[in-house]
Length: 193
Image (cartoon, rainbow, N blue to C red; front, top):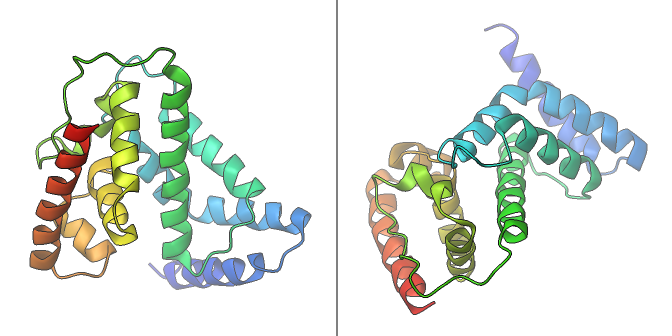
C-alpha cells in the first residue's frame, strides 16, 4: 500500500502538467496516465462491454486502445483523477455509440421493442441492437447533465446504486429516487420516439 500515495500524487502532477503541454509532451503525459490508471480504465471498458452481444466486433481490449487514441488526440483538460476517468468513460461510451451508428445500415422497423430501464437490465445495456442503442442515446441526450451522468454510470457502465451514489457524491436514498424519475423520463422519451 506504500506506493499508493505516490501513484496518486503522480497522477495529480501529470494532469496539472497536461493542461499546458505541447502536443508531443501531451502524448507522453497521456501515455503515463494511461499506464498508471490502466487497471481502472480496463475495468471500465470491461464493464461497458460486459452486456454486449457475443458477436459484437469491438472487444474490451480494442475499446481500451481506441479510448487511448482519442485521449491522445483530444485537447481536453482534466481537473483531477476522477475527471480523467469520467471523461475516459465518456469517450468509451461515444466509441460504442459511433460503432452502433456505423452498424446501422437500414432504418429500424416499427416492431422494435422499447427498452425498459430497470434494475435487472442495467448491466445489459449494450445487448440492444444498434437502432435501440441509438434511440436510448438520443433519449439520454435530452436529460439534464447530472441525469446523463447517472444513466451513464448505472446503465452503460453497470455500477450499482451504491457505487453510483459514491461516484456522484450523493446520498443513496436521494439517488435512488432520482433514478426512478430518470427511468420514467427515458421510458416516455423512448415510447414517443
